[in-house]
Picture 1: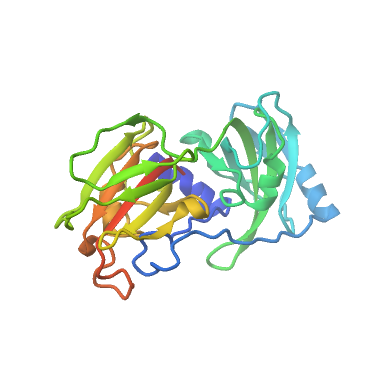
Picture 2: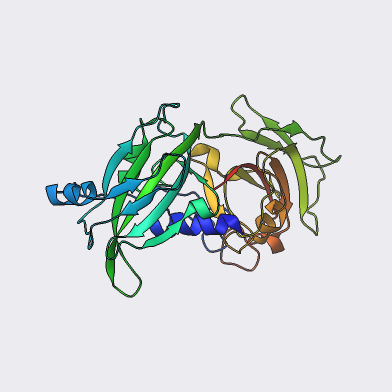
Length: 316
């Protein structure tokens, strides 16, 4: 799957972390919300800056560049350098930015991997998708800018190398905060969802409504984005209620959107089964019997049938 290739690049080479302890994790029902990890990067030394200055970049922005690296290139910390400035829209903090990148090893100057051979990807400038040093370099730039970025890394076998990236900023847009699409009339008798002006859902469970024996999946808003596939990382807003008494037990709306890998067992089975096949931009009502939620675990929700309203914001 193309998205896996790109996500592998960002996770391995850019240090992007998918926070998998969130809603629906059967091992951690009481701490479902993602929390940003803190990262402190040392200021580059004069030698670090000089090392990156020695890299030659060939190729116009918008096409895959070729890097010539004076080897061995090493840096003690992350270093960035703008090699060409764009003239497009300014990229602001919190926005989504479309990126293409190619990476080379500093030890021997060999090309390691490139998104130009697959597809570009989007990163959210919120302190999570990109390493802090690169994000700092991106914010305030304009679309069309090219940035060189060096990052020292240690491999699983303990070897060290500095990876050099050429990053092209292709686009920018506001990050979605709620489902956007065509309203769908739900089946009769289901719990009723009401949205406030910001899109935050509330739930009304009809009197006499009984827990289903099988998963109930009802699209409330049909988005026009790509279809969500198993193994993809998705970003969502969600809220969850106990079916037994209608009380809400968690909500990402009170903190920040949640990112997880769907269809892989990282979240409860009701999410994996109910969200794979939906489209980005959709809002989905899930009524989940306990067997597909936390049943059989030590969670305080183990005996509860659950209701979730999930807004699928994007594939990450």
